[in-house]
Image: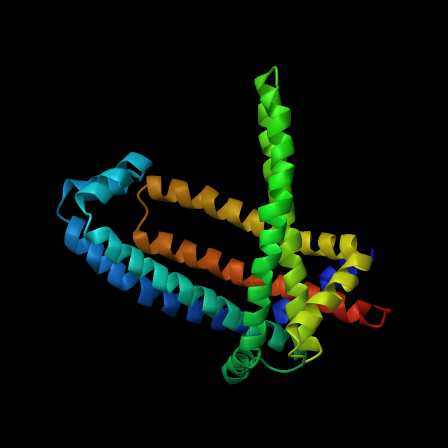
Length: 291
């Protein structure tokens, strides 16, 4: 099957880019330290010697958050600013790193060096940022209009339900459709980025419009290929949480839990490269076809 062959090519390319996984992990690790450190010291100062710290250790629910917001009204605006700014910076970092990933995938036989990786990150940043702005419109159309219409139909169906099973089935189907729509939109804009890198083009709107035609002819093959790394991502997540939760309950050393977390982060970096590698090989294989 051609899809499996292309997936194999993407798998091979990903495993040749192991050094890039290390670069991604290092950059994310440094960013996490910069973000978490001030928040840790702020929370440690306010909660470390209080009963609230014990409650937080047991878990957080909405009532506890409400109580915290009421008792520490001056603290929460500070926390909001501390989280909002890193959130924006992380979004820009995400866009920045995507350029390096696809750029180094394109350089198939070249050894991955940090200087080349960062150069590709910078080279494609503004193109990918424009893709991000266009994707906002795409997500709005799909989820703000199309999915709301689908959701209204499901609500109409479940509203007149005679059994609870209808409501359960309806809500699960609605969630499944939402997830599938998300994968389709994300896949579409992934291919826009891949096209911009392969063609070394700065015309993001043109690449987006061309991608509509390109995906229209090859949608199901491209989508199936996209879902394969997605399944691997879900499997990694299930394994991570299945081990991590019992690990905490059994009182394992924090160092062991931290190492397990980093293993999971590395797996996410690997699957991220796998997504783009399979898309790159699919686009190259279909590029000779008439668009």
